[in-house]
Every structure is written in structure tokens, then in C-alpha cells.
Image (cartoon, rainbow, N blue to C red):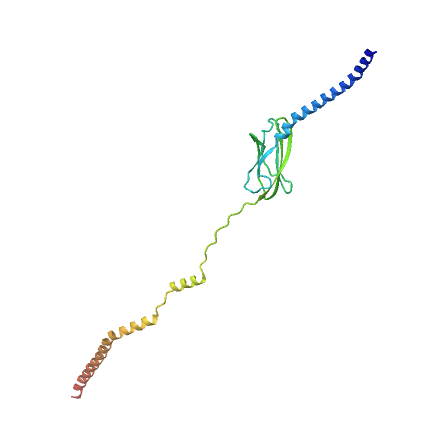
Length: 216
């Protein structure tokens, strides 16, 4: 009788134990999967960027850099992505994504205004991670030419006065010349009068001499 009861008890216990063991195995499998996936999700991620989140940069910026905790998975031509879109959604990045260690980079030609970097990184275990970085581009300042100094009206007036020549009156020169020439001409006038008187006397004497024989 006792042997029969013991056999019945073992029969009831065995299925219960098996179900419990099956549950433990399933739980261990789930925990193992979570343990292997945790490092990729916990340790692979963005650590820094140029420009940084919320930064204000000038349009002279020529490249966007994204740095991660681990080097991205190599050999995936389409897996790594960097796009730099302006406020209208236009992608202003150029060329291809390059990788140097843990940093992904891409050249850009930026306009002024808000921009967003859209990126995709693939961790070494093949797990893709997407993200974005927002920043603003400020137009570069254009250098202005220095104003040229303009001389004042007073300066120009004084300069014009200083270089203006005072003309010499021509009448004064002519009067001086006439005054200087008068004393030199006086002897010629007197000589001419004397010559006329002498010639007149000679003519009178000659005419009297011609008339005297006629009277005799």
C-alpha cells in the first residue's frame, strides 16, 4: 500500500518539476540575449560633434564631424549617413562620408540660417543608430572700406586764397615808361627847333643876296 502511494506521488511531481525547469531555461535564454545586446545599446553612441548642439557658427565652416564611443562598422557603403539640411530641407552637404577612428565627417557648403545634421551610425555589432544635431549658421561679415578724408570748405578756401596771384597794373608800367622817356626826348625837340630857325635864317639871307643885284 505504501509503495503504491509513493509511486503516485512521484508521478504527480515529475510533470511539475519539468515545467519549472522549462521556465528557468526560457528565463535564462532571455537574460542571456539581453546581456549580449546591452553593450551595443549602452556603449555605442554619439559623444561629440562639430558644430555642437545649439551652436552658432559662420558660413566659413567647411566640414561636419561626429564622434562616437566606438569606430563604426566598416564595409557598409550605404550604412553610414550624414545629411546637413537647411530650413527649407535642402541638403547642403557634399561629397562622401569619411571615417577616421571613431569620427565620421562630411564636407559642407552652408548658407545662413537654421540647420539640422541628420546622421546614421552603425555600431561594430551591426546595430544602426540614428540621431540629429541642430545648429545655426550666421553669415560671415563683409569687411568695409575705411572712409576717405574730405578737406573742409574752410581748408579749401584758405588754400585757394594763398595760391591766387595779384596782377600788376599795366597802366602803372606804361606811365612809368613814359615818364622815364620824357627827359631823354627833350634835347631832340630843342635841337629840332634850333635847326628850323637856322635853316629859316639861311633862307632869308640867301633871298636878300639874290635880290640885291637886281636893284643895281
